[in-house]
Length: 392
Ligand SMILES: *Cc1c(COP(=O)(O)O)cnc(C)c1O
Image 1 (cartoon, helix red, strand yellow):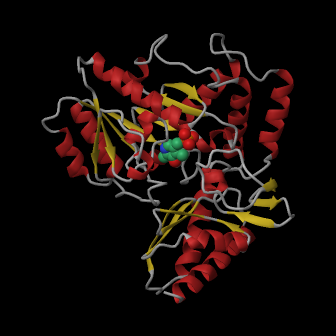
Image 2 (image 1 turned 30 degrees about the horizontal axis):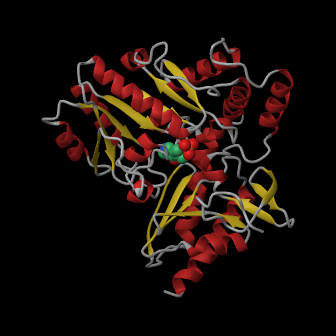
């Protein structure tokens, strides 16, 4: 069959038809265990009844009005996000890249308010912030930027998890207005920085009047065992972006701001036709209610620990395993060699996984994954890894 889809994705030859929790079924009736959640999106699993009910109920009443009117569900969702994050206000978008665009625009306008004509934002190597022009320019992966120059200027790149490099970039450069960073790099290979990295960045930003802007698009909405990953550090950022799991698959993103950063984007400064429409907000409200009602943040912590312990036991002593990392249900298994072939082998075995930067197996299971499914995940993937490394 010829496809009229632009070939921007190297797609696996499988088409899913329906799901339930951590299970998916393809159009041949074969069942798969999902350890990827549509890349950190379906944190509540597939076909969650609370999201289903919210969407059905809301679509009967109203799908869209416009941001030129008040939207009660958007105001409710903003209130919930503020309560859960400690931030002050919210701009709603339809995706992660758009949430980061809002953050980047906010940082620039903040800089202009300080009289800085060419505001610069410090960003990290191996970061991922999206595919729009500004966000791909902020992204620390040459493959994402290749062919799309000229890039958007105003980004200064430093190594991740290196406070000295940030200090150096700030010193003597009066144009720096913000630091944009992921609390854990997802696309970059599940890179977990030093436990006090965010605290140190917070200190530097305070010292130099910079905005600390956290991209929590992958780490947020319970994934790491807290609602937002910075809550492990007891700090607050000035700006925080979320998307992916906020709607459990319904497109919605948000840029949260606090304090002086919350006063930057004034009437007419930014906008979105769809952003925060009633349907998307109804789904997100159902997601937040379910996270709390089912205690899924605590579940992410205990289940993530069980998965990590399982792999650590099964793969113990294997010389090709460089590291097994995790924070809640964000799990990375780093090999000493390219292992992208494991994705197809796992698919054949009925398991959905991902590999980033060629050597890092990345697992982002739904937070609702149950104990037998955890056993199946650990057993199936360990066998595949052991068989693979035996051939090296
Ligand atoms: C996925 C992701 C994005 C981009 O989100 P889109 O919804 O694909 O635009 C940005 N930052 C991080 C950390 C992500 O994981």
